[in-house]
Image 1 (tube, rainbow, N blue to C red):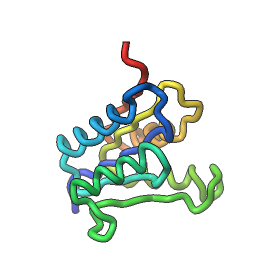
Image 2 (cartoon, rainbow, N blue to C red):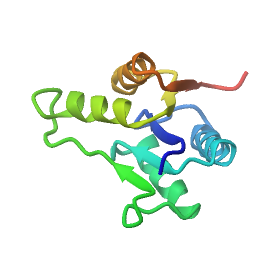
Image 3 (cartoon, helix red, strand yellow):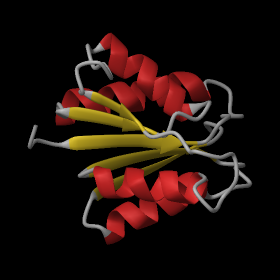
Length: 132
């Protein structure tokens, strides 16, 4: 599979009303538009898990190799934790969609997007906040 490899990462929670519906739409649109050979997730609760679920609806599976879930070996930043997992995601994708909550207090998925950009991936960042 030499085509697009789409990583989808983001916040574990979306606080804005309708945020999950908007995230669902963004993920579906990214998959439909790009038609990636592989969808990549970090296996975290929230956006990562939603992306895995939606990719599964499109027929992507780990068994077929069309879905890759990079999980951290340990629940810490380093060593062998979130930093290593996030770097693996960044290096494994050609495209990355980051969906974050407007009130997020962490920057893990942002750091992953930064690393993916440095590695040459096309990165799209979407912040989900209240609709005015």
